[in-house]
Length: 135
Image 1 (cartoon, one colour):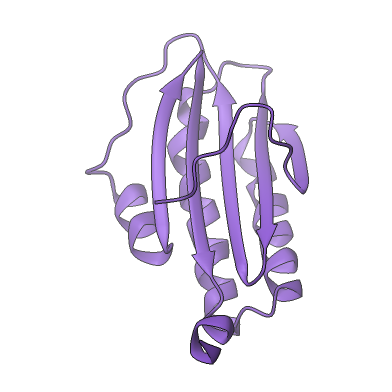
Image 2: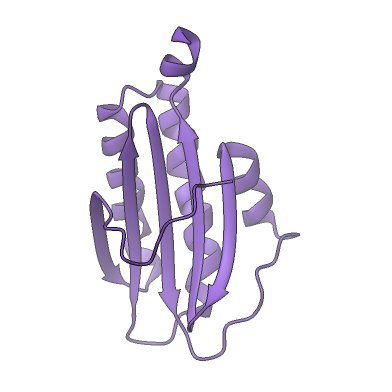
């Protein structure tokens, strides 16, 4: 599971784009860039890019028109946690049987989804294989 964050904990990087699927590529590219800076392997970088895309696929249908898709990146020593979220007035429960969740849960080292305070949040995390192989 991704680490639990306190509401006042500030992300190392936060990206806010319109809640529209055309902007998912921006989040995927940002994810790849940040994970490369953390020395993730090429395979892990691609897995993270795909996982972020699937997280967006889960949250975007729940977004109210005109709202933002928010991606928060928490960087650690050989670890990246990404939290994507949208706000919505009629958010359903996370669909853990969906294809998007199955892909996300398989690719990420840990994944979680929650609905709280009118926001649908999907979090994922992964540790660098490079770091893991050194331990």
